[in-house]
Image (cartoon, one colour):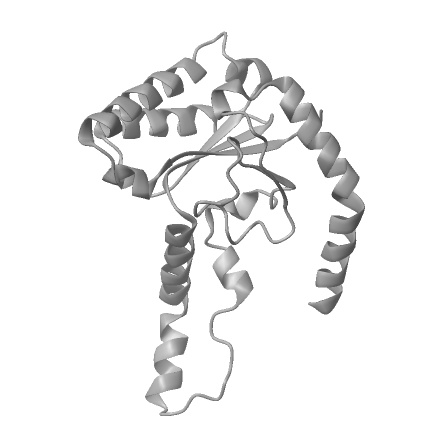
Length: 207
C-alpha cells in the first residue's frame, strides 16, 4: 500500500500510575514482543524494517530498556519501512524536552540578551529550533491518525505533528483491527486528501 512510516502508541508515561502488577505484566509483554521482532523469520527481518523507540526510556525496567536498545541498534541500518514505538511517552514530555534542548543550544544568546537589560522582541528560539529536537525529526508528519475503540481523544499523542492529519476513530478495539479496517481507513483518507493538500499548501505560502 506504499506506507513507509508507522508510529504506534505503546505505553504512556501516565500508564505508570496503574497498578504495579499491571505495569509489570505490560513490561514483560513488551520485552517478549520486541524480542520476537528481532527473530530471523519476523516481519522486521523480512522487510528490513527500521525501529525507533520514542519516550523517556529511563523509566523502563532494565530488561525492557536493554531489549529496546538492542532492537534500535540492530535495525539502525535497515532501509525498509520505519516503525516508531512511543513508549514511556507523552507529547507534552516530547515538547518540553525539545524546549529544554533548544534553550541549552541558545543559552549563550539568551544570557547575552538579558545581560544587556533589554528584550528587543528578537526571536531566540524558533519553531524550527524546537522541531530539530522532536523525536520525529527524521519522519514526516502523519497523514492519518487511527484511534481505535471509537475514542475521540488524542490522549497526548503527537500533538505537535498532527495539524494536518486525518483523524479516524474506528469502533473495533486494537486487537480486532484488521487489514480490512486499514484499507477502509486509507480509502477515507484518500477521499479527504484534496482538502488536506490545499490546507498544507496555504500554510506553506503563509510561512
